[in-house]
Amino acid sequence: MDIVVTGTGYVGLVAGVCFADVGHNVTCIDVNEARISLMQKGISPIYEKDLQELMQKNAEKGRIRYTTDYANTYKNAEVIFIGVGTPENPDGSANLEYVEIVSKQIAENIENDCLVVVKSTVPVGTNERVEKIIKDNLKNNVKVEVASNPEFLAQGNAVHDMLHAKRVIIGIESKSAEKKLNEIYKPFNLPIVSMNRRSAEMVKYACNSFLALKISYMNEIANLCKIVGADIEEVAKGMSYDDRIGAKFLNAGIGYGGSCFPKDTKALNYLAEQNGYELKTVKATIEVNEEQRKRLIKKAKKCFKSFEGKKIAVLGLAFKPETDDLREAPSIDNIKYLVNQGANVYTYDPIASNNFKEKYDDEKIMYAKNPTEALKDADACFIFTEWNEIKDIKPEQYKELMSNPSVFDGRNIYDINEMKENGIDYHSIGR
Ligand code: UDX
Image 1: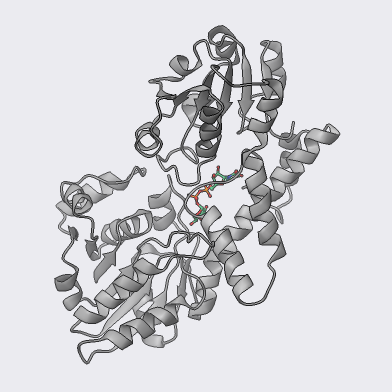
Image 2 (image 1 turned 180 degrees about the vertical axis):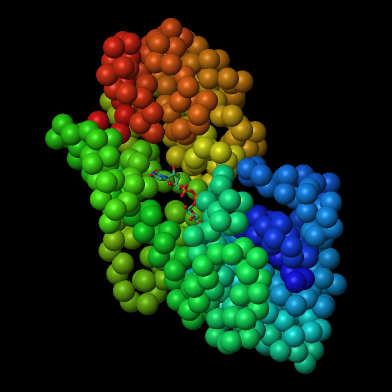
């Protein structure tokens, strides 16, 4: 089937490439010309496992193309997926500006009946709003249907998550929209769950907020473990055997980040408030996470009366491994704090350093080529991302390289006894 995908970020580009890979004929649209020209050369604008290879493979087969020319592309489109960003507004609500602009552009240009599918994460009721914008702005006498199809991919594993999704959620209000979406997803051979649009929109927020809640819950239990002499790693292991709880998302740490959990929990909370309901669990999830991010730095502040002139190593900048994404990464506020306190910060990240430099350039932030360079003569080290390369650092290396082997580990990478045996002043979460 001919499919148009608008927006070439994590959601749109991954969807477009995977649609092409299962045999559809895909056109990806973006307003960013530099981005489009990069993709036309077969280069992925984002770091995502397997994505660039699949872009090139499907371009060679003539199944995917990239353009900024939305007007001509929409003209005869049969199906248009909207995968543009819905960033956070200052009040916590989702910013639907881009979804609305695209809806209007679709309305003004389509000349054939068409199905518009909202893949961006949008608050309940947005599909109806999109439908209204399109109907209000139509220039031709055509029939347009709007369906919801939220995505559940995790960054770093996005291609795999889309090709092997646990389920495909489709929110539809008509049999014809359901039929078309079933056709599109048939080659994926995945379970398809149909429901009404409002429920489909809610599934996405409910899933992300539930996972965020699970993390905040574990972080709180970890903090209590520390006080009462239990070990969160052992506790999590004990919990994981209960399949009602499950073994995933039980890792306590420096708090969740990324482009989804922080934004989606706040948007869900906002939606509840707007509808006169207090969503207590989600509120608590957000609050716990905000506190958790400051936990290690507060501890370090107690140990070091001042950071002035100290060399501080920071291992890991990205919000999680296998991505160069810094959105809501705990490293950002912690590094800003250290710099404000007069520290010289030597960071290391396998791929996110350039992004960090572009966004938060400061002469007090240095970018090491490897962990050894960051750790050399450091007075303290913070670990914010559990990259394999960082996990591979041996405890004795901290002792050998640092002038004062004090390690604040936000990802519980090390065995506490081993660190102690190596003479390291080791602080982690919930142990
Ligand atoms: C998440 C969801 O997993 C995905 O389904 C959704 O579509 C988008 O949001 P993503 O943000 O890419 O994906 O990353 P994820 O791997 O879920 O991690 C999110 C954050 O939670 C990271 O900061 C991670 O470090 C943290 N996390 C995760 C924990 O602190 N503990 C855990 O046990 C798991």
